[in-house]
Image (cartoon, rainbow, N blue to C red):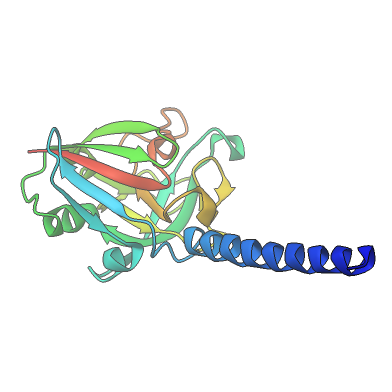
Length: 200
């Protein structure tokens, strides 16, 4: 057999192997980067327990969403109030669906490992102001907001499905928020929520 024929056969074998490997990698990547979040899950469990409830983004949406305006402050935008609408599920409704009707404290973990603890009662005693000058707010409930691709989350970054689920804890401002006594509530809005631990 000539060297040309042997070289041709080897090239064909290598090409077939490369195509096979390439199709496998693409399939795996597509599954893990599903922008709808349907392949990723939110885990809700009691502190210290190994039994958990898991929900996809679609499961969360099925609980029924509300759209509400929230006001907030962070260190950007000259510390002025930012007014935005968010759509999501009431926090208590989500916890009750997971079996926790008497939740007192929650600890939320984001996909990057960041954790923050909250007393439920304090999150339900907060307000939204209609503009920068308002001194009286309207009570708003905390929600687990559901972001769409391109929605601003966290530190003024757009939601990226590769970074985690499109879920973010959003809540109002304290009644003392004003030009002189600012409540930088947005710094506590956890983005890319992936786990909620509950104490009753």
